[in-house]
Image (cartoon, rainbow, N blue to C red; front, side, top):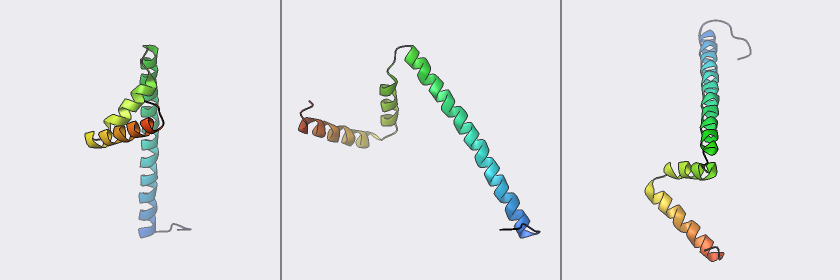
Length: 85
């Protein structure tokens, strides 16, 4: 696609440009959302909440119950093996 001339190539270039521009807009929205999330964590921290614990809870809530139980079981087994319990 060195030169974009007419016909199908012009349509392909326009379509490609549209995809790129959509992705750019979504990236901007993603950054705005990331900034909003950071702000909420800041508010929670200011109120005395442990943001590390909150992030762990958020990560665990994304998993189904069985996956979460399996992860907790493995973690407990490893901790016991290392004398951490």
